[in-house]
Length: 283
Image 1 (cartoon, rainbow, N blue to C red):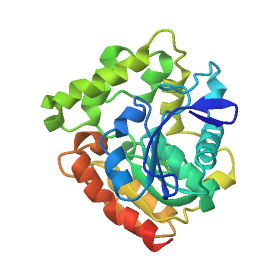
Image 2 (tube, helix red, strand yellow):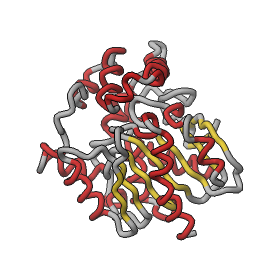
Image 3 (cartoon, one colour):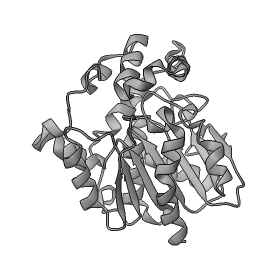
Image 4 (tube, rainbow, N blue to C red):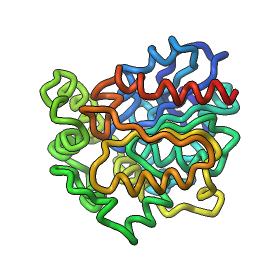
């Protein structure tokens, strides 16, 4: 349990605290277990690895107030976790809303981010602008993917979670026994005794109105953007590239969609090796 900003956040960790830190940030429907297949391999590469349950998820505290989950507060949680784990900086790997938070941390606190690996997410300021200027690049026709408005209306159902996991993964993964395992783990997040503003707010982090100019600064760390390709992603990739002052890589992992670290952990690890190499070369 990591104490930061008045809350306790749970993190599954591996590796020596003396090694460089990699912080894994899940998306709106997940928790630390989304990273369970890559924790030990990354630690074996010589890293201190921490998969965090974001505020309102898993074993972390679940504040009831909606404003406990805004972008400013979530960025503060992540920088607090880095310090509480005994580090001054980290490589951030984030998926979905976790990726949006990672981009924002890198904008506001450049000295704390060694490198950034974002899965299916660009900077919230860039996505928000595209939402109003080129909406067809933000809402590609993905069958079964639930629009943000639906999540905002209330607590998603078990069926909504299943449809979201189906839409976020490649068809090949749907027949894998791990599909049902991950679905069961995610459905555990629907426990009725838990307040649910976290799910809705984490969806909205992707579209967040960035609080100030500090959160919109260009990225000075090496960036790897992993995405499934297809409609809209060329434009989003271009926006991400233009925001990055350092080395920028765009990667597509075959036979995966928006959750490659779950769908094909081995291929995902192979894809991020160059990004980790960037970090070593820049140390």
